[in-house]
Length: 270
Image 1 (cartoon, helix red, strand yellow):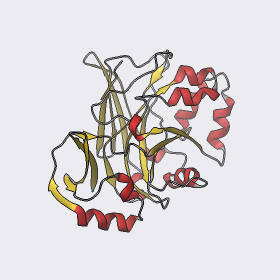
Image 2: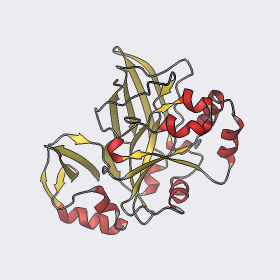
Image 3: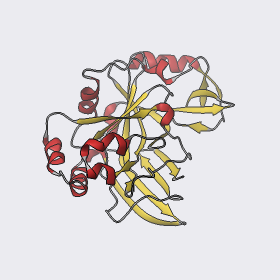
Image 4: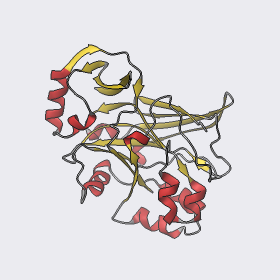
């Protein structure tokens, strides 16, 4: 089942498989209850079809977090960019995962909406990621596509600049839907990324979630261990599709990311 968020005349409408949920006003309502109760509520509330435009499947006030150095290629790329490379090697093998705040829902872009790069950065990349959806009980109820846009030049200058490299308006995109499924369905999903510039493909790559060093459950537990999320949370699980160091995003590029059956496309805007 696919859960989507639509917007018409500034009114947000949640829908399941294209049918509006008549009395569901937010994703937080669904994620506040356990997995079984959520599905029961969705079945009860499914009403007429909706054709309003699709937006990012996250509430404005919900939090989006991300994990880093969860694939071998990510560790190598971060070590290449950094003057303090050994910290990435250590966190890759450490018991504790790296998790960091990415933004509130209102900062996140949806399908077709523009993502941004920072004006004070000279090296910027998209990061295609499996984004898991976690309810208030710490249960993983589904996934969506995540794009963790990042300034590699700022983080490479000093790891303490990570929040500035990762968190700014338009630095994240999610969508186009939440695939509601068991976590086992996420263990071997294809992840693809294509970047187009002036009508030509300038980067294309593919990987699989089976390459994750840490399981989705491990990452979810690390995030929720000492922090409650009464309305649920979305966690990007890291990337290993990394353009080489000669590449940087520029205005007009179009980034298309696929995870499983979902595909998200966003232009780069000023």
